[in-house]
Amino acid sequence: MIENGTPKSSKEAPPLRVEAVRKSFGAQKVLNGISLEAAKGETVAVLGKSGTGKSVLLKLMIGLQQPDSGSIRVHGEELRGLRREELNEVRRKMGFLFQNAALYDSLTVEENVVFPLERNSGLPKGNKKKRARELLAAVGMDESLNKLPGEISGGMQKRVGLARALALEPDILLCDEPTAGLDPITAAEIDALILKMQKERRMTSIVVTHDLPSARTISDRLALMRDGQIVVEGTFEELEGSKDKFVREFLNRGS
Amino acid sequence: MELPAEFGAFRGELRAAWSDVRPVTRLLTRFIEWFGELGLFCGELVRGIFLNRFEGAEFAHQLDELGSKSLPLAALAGAATGVVLALEAHDSLLRFGAKSLLPALLMVSIVKESGPIITGLVVSGRAAAGIGAELAAMRVTEQIDAMEASGVNPYSYLAATRVLACIVMMPLLTLVADFCGVVFGWITSTLTQPISWQLFLEYGCKSTTFTDFLPPTMKTAVFGSIMGVVACFQGMRARGGTEGVERAATRSVVQASLFIILADVLLVRLIQVIWP
Image (spheres, rainbow over the protein chains, first blue to last red):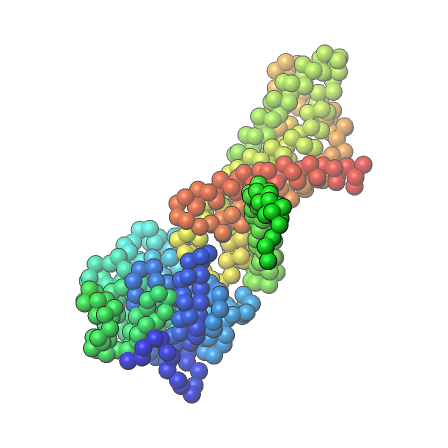
């Protein structure tokens, strides 16, 4: 178990490394020198109370927001200071599953998945639709190709969101509360899907969640956030054995 | 070291004066910040147009959205302008014994100013609110973030297509408004004193030159760019749920109309200088 968010040392640059990142919105300090890294094929679940900056951390990792200070490296490449086109190149290696799926509401389910493929994949035209259908079949949404996002349930939207996040075959997957607002059965289905995709593609994943059973199922390692920092990291079993009051309170309440 | 009493009094006066001017400086700062953000937005927009792939299908969709849906509005506004101008001008010209000048007066005033400005304001009311609300809704539901996260430039896909569609469609809608204005002006004047369409058109066109028609029609492309830029800017920087969407839509209409009126004043003078 690693305390105070000290990243592990490794010879090769990890796919994702966050070092001493600070982020404030006005007077409100959200991230206070946070450090975190994920190795290839590893899934890290980031847990913490609401409003501790977990979603902000994910948005910083994909360059949707800029840190005030600190470093974010994706495959060794520093995100700060990249031009939009350079940043887009990095983003093409990453997938992002949004909390509310964030599907394009004027496009059908199929068009939502084709959208990134049309713009950022070198596939021939006919193959893009084929690939989108394969992805939608993999998440069990091949029956709803022509439906609009407003016509399908929240769980189905998450499935489509996952298919869209995986469209460009990313090697890093960022998930923001993948099971939030879903019933336990649908949540377990989404977990199983993420797990299946991770195994098939050996992706590095960062999953922000409040859902402890979900975190236990899909992650190799947990990182607990408090006051804008990672206060403790380790496997679920290691954290269960922790005597830290905050860790105990969090795990007991969540399980 | 002890400071003299006069210095303390002076410091108090200075502080009071500062608190008086503070709201003004804050307002000024916000104003400068707004223009700065608008400048950055325009920079991203230009990069989106020239450095990224051209989103032809989305551009065509926006042409249809803006053109076909604003067409009845532009036609109606043009027709109403023609009717009102014909009624007002008829009485005035009658008073000066210059009733025969009605076709010319109607044609020149519609083509030169009434048609373009009325089309600009009416279409901006519909299109700017629509674009502002649509993009704001996409912003607050993270759809624009999702676009960026998948490596797609939203300035190219969302903003550039809408701004270009506004620029292309505005002169075309103005032509429709001008045509309806002239036709309904003729119908109105015919009700009081019958005159054939051919004769009306002949008298009207005789007094209308190329410079009366083309520059004012083309200036609506500038109105279109103002409308598109302001609406996309307000939409893409929206924050705060439903209220943010409402705010973006309202600001889009108000600011687009305001800037169109200001631009019209400058463009009328510019046209007069270039084509005296």
